[in-house]
Length: 154
Image (cartoon, rainbow, N blue to C red; front, side, top):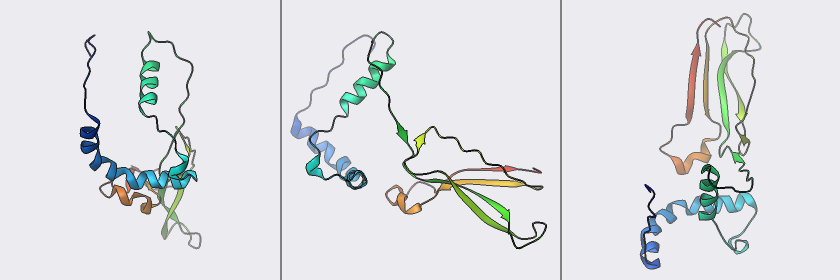
């Protein structure tokens, strides 16, 4: 920091003590990740977070030369787009029904692109939300809506 090497020392028992509440909060997510990966705790021999952080920092600093390294990011939750559409059994859009489509499936690569065409003569209102709210149970404080837009007289 400011061209100074900053070091902090902490005893292992002290580190474990201050880490316990955080580790308890993420334990469920770690178990879900293992389950989705088809692994058991016994299959994990090491977890290297610091190495990945150091590598990413080295990539960002132009004075370091590192081998090319690619990170594939994914959407952790399915994201759906919702809109009001004309019900198929009605004429002239007299009744509208809620329609939706998943635009970014769970575990799809980021960034993602989805092209949709809407044929409308009135206002088009779009909502983007998490498709499966059961996935958000651990994140109860998060709104299920990601974004919403309104386009008058489309």
